[in-house]
Length: 98
Image (cartoon, rainbow, N blue to C red; front, side, top):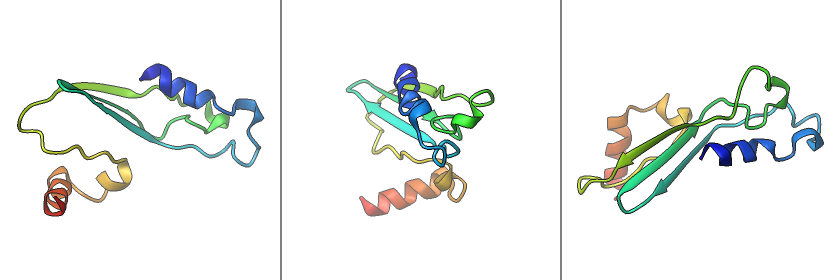
Protein backbone atom coordinates (compact mmCIF):
# COMPACT_ATOMS: atom_id res chain seq x y z
CA UNK A 1 0.00 0.00 0.00
CA UNK A 2 2.77 2.41 0.91
CA UNK A 3 4.52 1.86 -2.43
CA UNK A 4 1.25 2.38 -4.32
CA UNK A 5 0.54 5.67 -2.57
CA UNK A 6 4.11 6.79 -3.30
CA UNK A 7 3.72 5.98 -6.99
CA UNK A 8 0.42 7.86 -7.10
CA UNK A 9 2.10 10.88 -5.54
CA UNK A 10 4.80 10.80 -8.25
CA UNK A 11 2.26 10.98 -11.10
CA UNK A 12 2.71 14.26 -12.89
CA UNK A 13 5.46 15.61 -10.66
CA UNK A 14 7.27 18.50 -12.31
CA UNK A 15 5.21 18.23 -15.49
CA UNK A 16 2.03 19.24 -13.63
CA UNK A 17 0.65 22.67 -14.58
CA UNK A 18 1.50 25.35 -11.99
CA UNK A 19 -2.17 25.97 -11.18
CA UNK A 20 -2.55 22.32 -10.16
CA UNK A 21 0.66 22.13 -8.10
CA UNK A 22 -1.14 23.73 -5.13
CA UNK A 23 -3.95 21.14 -5.07
CA UNK A 24 -3.81 18.05 -2.91
CA UNK A 25 -6.14 15.28 -1.90
CA UNK A 26 -6.92 12.56 0.56
CA UNK A 27 -7.18 8.86 -0.21
CA UNK A 28 -8.77 5.85 1.42
CA UNK A 29 -8.30 2.39 -0.07
CA UNK A 30 -9.55 -0.99 1.15
CA UNK A 31 -8.65 -4.46 -0.03
CA UNK A 32 -11.08 -7.07 1.26
CA UNK A 33 -9.79 -10.62 1.36
CA UNK A 34 -11.37 -13.81 2.65
CA UNK A 35 -9.65 -13.54 6.05
CA UNK A 36 -8.41 -9.96 6.33
CA UNK A 37 -9.23 -6.39 5.39
CA UNK A 38 -6.34 -4.04 4.59
CA UNK A 39 -7.16 -0.34 4.79
CA UNK A 40 -4.80 2.48 3.84
CA UNK A 41 -5.66 6.09 4.69
CA UNK A 42 -3.73 9.19 3.74
CA UNK A 43 -5.51 12.34 4.81
CA UNK A 44 -4.43 15.90 4.02
CA UNK A 45 -1.22 14.60 2.42
CA UNK A 46 1.19 15.51 -0.31
CA UNK A 47 -0.70 13.31 -2.88
CA UNK A 48 -0.47 16.40 -5.00
CA UNK A 49 0.42 19.54 -2.97
CA UNK A 50 3.80 19.55 -4.73
CA UNK A 51 4.73 22.92 -3.23
CA UNK A 52 4.44 21.44 0.30
CA UNK A 53 6.68 18.38 -0.28
CA UNK A 54 9.14 19.37 2.44
CA UNK A 55 6.31 19.49 5.04
CA UNK A 56 3.88 16.70 4.15
CA UNK A 57 4.17 13.16 2.83
CA UNK A 58 1.95 10.70 1.05
CA UNK A 59 2.74 7.78 3.35
CA UNK A 60 -0.56 6.16 4.35
CA UNK A 61 -1.58 4.79 7.70
CA UNK A 62 -2.15 1.09 7.00
CA UNK A 63 -4.33 -1.16 9.14
CA UNK A 64 -4.81 -4.91 8.75
CA UNK A 65 -7.83 -6.41 10.46
CA UNK A 66 -9.20 -9.93 10.69
CA UNK A 67 -12.63 -10.52 9.21
CA UNK A 68 -15.32 -12.09 11.37
CA UNK A 69 -18.83 -13.42 10.84
CA UNK A 70 -20.09 -10.25 12.53
CA UNK A 71 -18.80 -8.03 9.69
CA UNK A 72 -21.76 -6.69 7.70
CA UNK A 73 -20.22 -3.85 5.67
CA UNK A 74 -17.29 -1.48 5.39
CA UNK A 75 -17.72 2.30 5.34
CA UNK A 76 -14.96 4.00 3.35
CA UNK A 77 -14.91 7.76 3.83
CA UNK A 78 -12.66 10.71 4.54
CA UNK A 79 -12.94 13.41 7.17
CA UNK A 80 -15.81 15.04 5.25
CA UNK A 81 -18.07 12.30 6.60
CA UNK A 82 -16.39 11.68 9.93
CA UNK A 83 -16.42 15.39 10.80
CA UNK A 84 -20.21 15.33 10.42
CA UNK A 85 -21.24 11.86 11.63
CA UNK A 86 -20.21 9.50 14.40
CA UNK A 87 -19.38 5.85 13.64
CA UNK A 88 -22.73 4.85 15.14
CA UNK A 89 -24.80 7.23 13.00
CA UNK A 90 -22.92 6.27 9.81
CA UNK A 91 -23.60 2.59 10.54
CA UNK A 92 -27.29 3.30 11.25
CA UNK A 93 -27.62 5.00 7.86
CA UNK A 94 -25.95 2.10 6.06
CA UNK A 95 -28.12 -0.47 7.88
CA UNK A 96 -31.27 1.42 6.85
CA UNK A 97 -30.09 1.44 3.22
CA UNK A 98 -29.33 -2.29 3.27
